[in-house]
Image 1 (cartoon, rainbow, N blue to C red):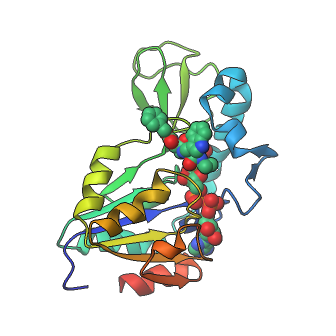
Image 2 (image 1 turned 45 degrees about the horizontal axis):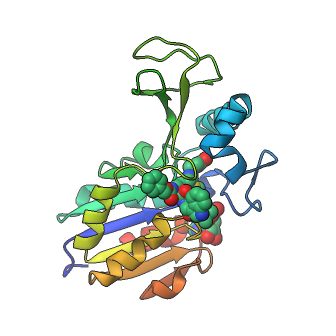
Length: 229
Ligand code: BV8
């Protein structure tokens, strides 16, 4: 990798699968009996905030019982040792990348351990169950906090910074994502058009696998440390 300068890595639910965090589409997109698209939209939240809070409270609670796996660890090592530009963009809302030590990290779809106050627009750290009546850490107002998660139809975070990194990178690596959701699924095309080499590491071909120069199939916990070394 010595000829490379700038690397962008995109991760999806597959990088956390071996830590015990269920992926979206392995279970036919069903979550606690709900379709993700039915509980991960603003309409769903305003229609039934109790259900949506239960859905996210259950996933936030799960974080207490899972640990980073060797794929998270290898990416954190690469982050700390890589001399050029490095950016890890994750679609995941779990905290396993930061717990493994990743620093140059963007959660483009938000984070389970954050809340967003609709009264004062502040984001704040949140650990336990939020429920409908949580009081905002910043303004104190109760009942106006939603999970700080990017739902379907909402704009992902830091898209300008991500787009800039994609256009400047020499290598784009996609790990553990089905390529089912945009704009993340389109990142490989941007990187490719701007001259980057592209690598996919996944359990099986993603929906965008034809855009990758190189593809390695198998568990991320096994293949990512090999790639990083
Ligand atoms: C946007 C947070 C525009 C929630 C998520 C109609 C209406 C509205 C929008 C749309 C529409 N039609 C299309 C769209 C666009 C939409 C979209 O792409 N929809 C899809 C369904 C067609 N996108 C959006 O809405 C995005 N926003 O477009 O905004 C806009 C523009 C301007 C101004 C305002 C708005 C926002 C999308 C974000 C939605 N939120 N997550 C939550 O987490 O609860 S998406 C959710 O699914 C995940 O976050 C993840 O990002 C995404 C994809 O999941 P994956 O991570 O890929 O997981 P999956 O299970 O699918 O795949 C896992 C893979 O890992 C598999 O391939 C498997 O083989 C592999 N694997 C498994 N085990 C392992 C492994 N690999 C390696 N090792 C293993 N051990």
